[in-house]
Image (cartoon, rainbow over all chains, first blue to last red):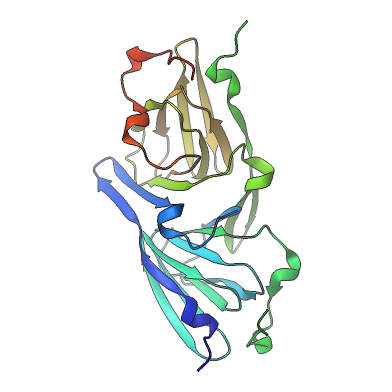
Length: 136
Length: 136
């Protein structure tokens, strides 16, 4: 049996301190990230129950953190599909060759994403029919 | 005239894409960060007009991003004081030896902070009277 991209997904929860002064969440890269990030992006203000994403990456790995709210990630690698529910503080490491739809399930949900590569337009695969992507 | 810590502060705005599908903000580390980050933390759910922070760091540099809302950073290095107003997408690079109070000026304001050092309890200086901190 050959390893598939979805088999490389890792999920878990980051440390969070919550009290009357608010919420502080922490990602110590050496402890939780499988790579050295070179880019951070965040997505917020998304209308409830609508999806972002809708693409796979050929080479880029993404470490997705639900900082606020509730986010569902529907992942598919052309071999199988799986959905992941992230609440505040939960993360999902998404290796390359996984097509992901990111659904913002409650208002104000906010996603943080750490990436191991800079933005590269040629790294995006928006055609779901192209799955599974050829291994590198 | 000797350089002071506050003289090393850098502020600016990150790229943001806003449309009916929401807001996407981006920090490409090689383009905007003066260091290689090893830690990310975020602060949210802070009651309006209350402050977080209230300390300086001996060695840690922090790249602060206002991802949502409006955040004011009151900074002091023992030589002078300065306040910075960050709206969504704005950043403030805070070198060591700067005492910072972070005021969350509107509801749901959210701060992202990239750091060049892991969490080290001994790096925090909470006594404002200890300013200015001795240079390393």
